[in-house]
Image (tube, rainbow, N blue to C red; front, side, top):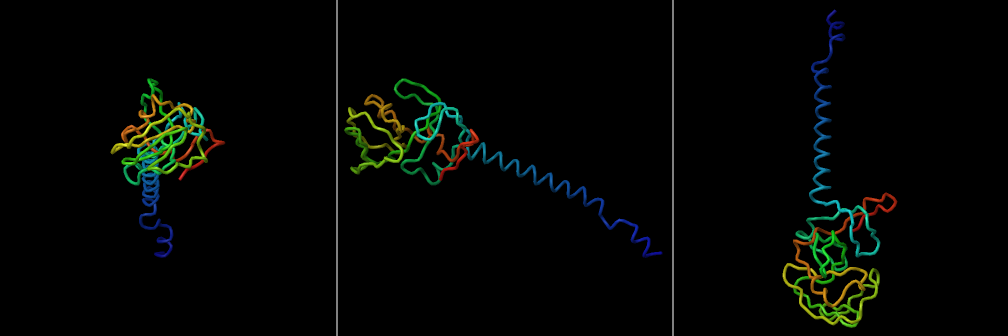
Length: 189
């Protein structure tokens, strides 16, 4: 009878285990959602492109910009960056996409439609369009700043070239991926 009674009785904690398992699953789900929200809205910043200056992106695209890379590893020349709302040439537009061209301490020369960084011609053939040839400027990028340009260099004039020296706090981050439209979803380095 003892064997029969023990077989009928639920094992110790069997009913309690279901409640604890459910609580474990809920805890894991809440932590996962919290981590995802942290990554998507703190580390990365969702941005709807309002003014694209970089090829491969369209106005209305939803992109995610990495907000912390500028503090940890910095940017590379040619990276697509998202600028916070700034005024360039009297035009206070929305967030802009631009390319990182030169960094603090580097000497930039813009002459006859070409860009030189520390005397070396910058090869931007993979992503840029022609530049207005009437610009002749030379300057050193100040500490804590980045010199940026749109891919469509015809948008740049001699009047605004120095306004494209942007302090790091005015850079939202580096573009990491396109999230929408869904047929164009892609990640970048």
